[in-house]
Length: 227
Ligand SMILES: O=C(CO)[C@@H](O)[C@H](O)COP(=O)(O)O
Image (tube, rainbow, N blue to C red):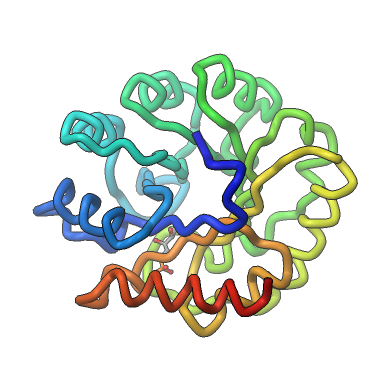
């Protein structure tokens, strides 16, 4: 589960990791200071790309990965995969509201499996999907790129949407993580945090550098500067 004590969490997206040595690469990024493993699941239907499923999640657990695994489902339909990911060792499961027939039921299904639950918002998806489910979400994930691929540029309008989501969280009085995903780098992580984000997914910014620790340290320095 997520560490509630820690203000900011860094969650490398393994979409940009070395899939031929995934266990080692995930170990390496955690040893470099990452908090959470972000696990992108794409079905070539909801998004135009195909990635990994519950077997790979289980393989990471069997390899010895203990950190929270944050499973971002970019699949449609979603419900049938939820028990499989919970069984495979997922800690958090998030999904896109457009991909579920019954958002409330899908959130409850995730919680019934013992995982934390979240909704994911594409750049053009309205936050109004949160209106009647704030009591069931543990994480709100705002996509700052259109989903499907790593290495895209951060969409600046996300900052305003983060502020809106943060206000909804404050109004709810609940302890909900605000996650941002897509194009997060050393030079924009502070702006995302100032807008309200407290959990940062970064794929290419970390995995495309030889020294993961130096990137993560620089990200933390940026976050320190706004405390
Ligand atoms: O879910 C997705 C893309 O759909 C993301 O998690 C990306 O994998 C993030 O990659 P970068 O933009 O940080 O390279």
